Length: 319
Image (cartoon, rainbow, N blue to C red):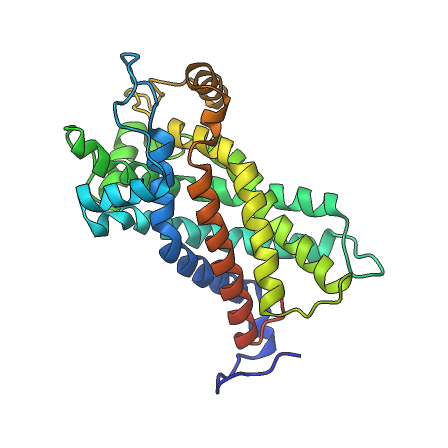
């Protein structure tokens, strides 16, 4: 039973447990998490692009830097506010991605998953559900992610003496659409979908499965500490599974294209994967793992704690 806290009057139950209301709550939680942890995502993207070979076969001359030095370098060379460059399309992405994946997963879980006598559900069902809804949600949100990645790299391009490609999210959208039409807006779509499927498997599936295990097997309370422990597990597993696909996705989406929106560096995701391993070694696939983990950990923690708390305050049943 959910009780109103601190004078907050929850909406009627038929509203509180409706799909559209849960969609709004998940978007609010995702926006909060994105704003708090976005600088780490920017640093991760910069680290993943370093060492990539250009059209002439030469590698970027930028030195490899860790998370802290990358962040300090961005502040020193570009300014404090550049740590949030590209945050607008990132928030737009979550208005589609997070809302869709959370509502779809809960619908699939409650209607199709099998519940055992002890309250737990088969892990394979959670895996399939997480992969499915993650891929669908990311496909819908892929244009916003493409714009975000390109905006994140603008500050570095300017420092290297290149003419700026874009100045705002709106300009990026129009330029990409004019260059490649609708197809251009989904450049890098498949590695993006693959990444989100793996990340969702690590984040959403892990959180749901671990939380239910803690509550039903260990008899822990469905409270703040259980949410925090479950989100810590989901952040680590999500980063481990998602980083290699994230490297490929970032490189495919950031590469220059011809007038038909075809990549000039990589033919497809597999080509990018093979070239990255061949040119830079296997561990290049884990470039940016630490900032990815350090971002996904706080992101998951912020998102799940916020989401569970606002569900509680709104009178919505616990996730």
